[in-house]
Image 1 (cartoon, rainbow, N blue to C red):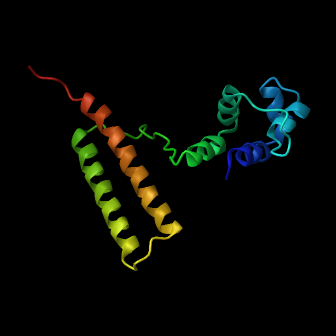
Image 2: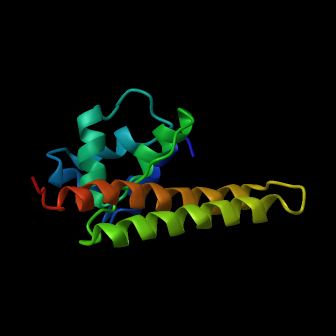
Image 3: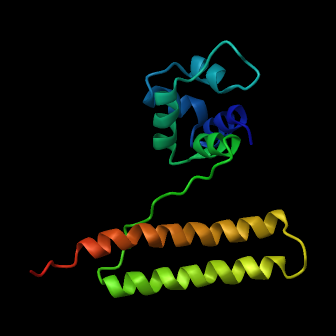
Length: 146
């Protein structure tokens, strides 16, 4: 999905649509709709407005579209469930790495790497990255002994 379509989709899918989202962003609904319409090229959202809109809606459509156009991916950091125990964090990281290797090898066994295969591997990589991000806070909780 391109960025313009992502903006339109985000506004359309938000509860109450432009009429509900516009006042929360101090905009008039008519202007807001024009900015969200990919067929109108006279009104645009400012970058800060795009961030605010995604924050208010709880959706990341525009961010994901931007990342996709730049050949990147978006990974929401999920370190809230970081293990207190550093050994548990290391074990979980090792397990996730094993999962990545298993899924990656499974996807190429048939001699093809499909779009669905890519999504499966990407999902596993994101879980691995989240585990890696959780390791440092777990390590920092270890008391230093002199």
